[in-house]
Amino acid sequence: MKQAIQNNEFCLYYQPQYNHKKEIIGAEALLRWHHPTREMVSPEVYIPIAEESSLILDIGLWVLEQACRDIKILEQRGLPSTFKKLSINVSPKQLQQANFKDLVISNVEKNNIQPKHLGLELTENLLVESFEHSIVLIEDLKQHGIDCSIDDFGTGYSSLSYLRRIPASLLKIDRSFVIDIDQQTEGASNC
Image 1 (cartoon, rainbow, N blue to C red):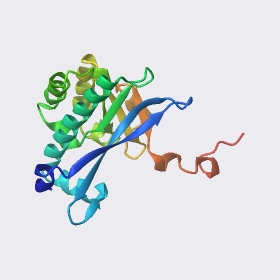
Image 2 (image 1 turned 180 degrees about the horizontal axis):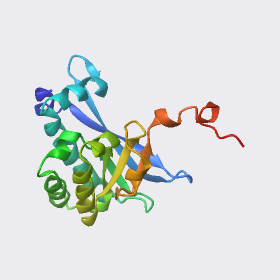
Image 3 (image 1 turned 45 degrees about the horizontal axis):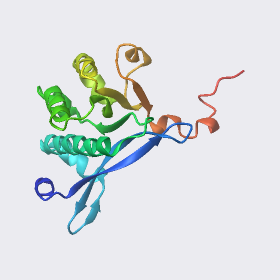
Image 4 (image 1 turned 180 degrees about the vertical axis):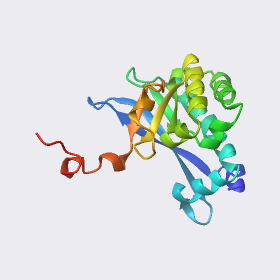
């Protein structure tokens, strides 16, 4: 993986997000590794390995830098008025870095992009692990115009009472929480 960073084997794909009128409102960055001999390596393989080591910090920084460069290109080409932000995922180790907020802000400034076009996605488990720190960080980033959202809500142990204190603008409910919801009887209310 160290060589993958040096050899530019990682790339970002962007999954578009649409509103109910089928207008693009944003995109989520998806990290992919094009290994020279194994072709495409699944994130399910390399992300846990990177998380266990400090490589996730290098990979996460690369994602932040590349996303900011890509936002600059999009802004220069002209974004639709409906476009809100391009979001990247943040790992727990990144969030624990003392200079994480400064890294984010400096990349926004270095690329001269509008902060509102960068979004950070934090997982529910990450928030639970360092709840007070996360709240302060989200508030600080929000003051700089950078939006944060909660990803994979419903997979951890947090309750809805946590949501009152989290200054995030978007809550992404985990797929496992809602899949086949219309066919499940245990969660349905009896009328």
